[in-house]
Image (cartoon, rainbow, N blue to C red; front, top):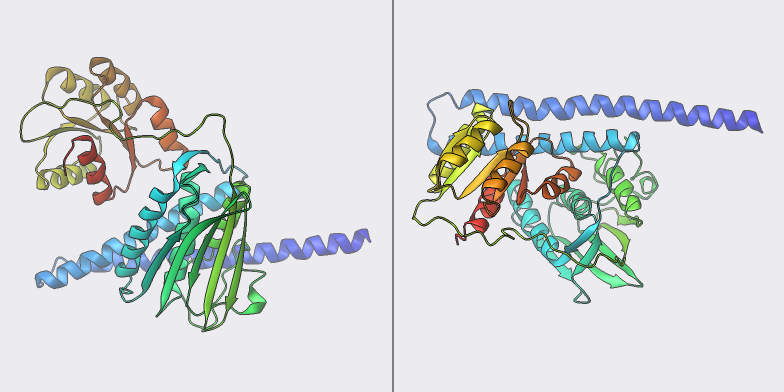
Length: 386
């Protein structure tokens, strides 16, 4: 009996090692393919080309860069799952607001992947709008499921939403795509297991998104399951408990201090950033939008500049800088004027980093690589710009 158990364990380990080897080989392919596009189109941009062609190449570079960021995030999550180090940070948040964001995100994702013709539908019960859970992780789960739905749906509809059912939130993502063969349904959530869809075509991806989603759902005290039929589509459903918390609902509002801004038509933003390329990106972006920028190369310089000027409307603060880091600089700047809005920006984009920044006293947070539209939304909210 014991021998059979050992033999079964050995076979399981052997299968796990084989899947990891296949995963690493596939990962190499998944990294090199977008890098080939990024470097290739970058080289083509040096040529004398029509503006329309250059825009096309820039869009390809951007899409492949975003794909690599998602890939890196997934690899980090897998490593943390393997080490049993995934952290869950629960708080009250507006679920309707999150799902509205997801609708915008998934529509843009479909358009950027040439699937403007897909019908994207969203539905939500009106039972209540606030959920006590980990907002970052709920968003991550929905993102994985929705991006998969779009990837495997050529025509038809992708729909998602949630409803209240027996003390649970019931989320779903449904598509009219290629579907999954029945024999693979029990393996689809396995780590390092990439399942080919029913149409037999090869699709981009590592196959770890569903495994990550399953782990996250379980860490949130829920469960996830799938229904699928070849050529008809798939439906992924996950349940999360409706929890109560003695802390009650609290919302992290942008501009909570009611800061009174200096008068004048042109707003001035102090950018504390030690990386020259990052600063040039912020400078060009913000000046195109009509802002004036001041550059500080470290936290100490940011504090000195802030002391010497009274026309600064907002501070964009990198966290990791020489001489003085962003957290230390924040303390000194808030001591001078506690109402000045300070937005943290960092490449350390773990889900706990935002909470750390909030607790330290930052008014908002944005992760690198910075998304232009999201940054401008945050800045305009603080500066009351429509």
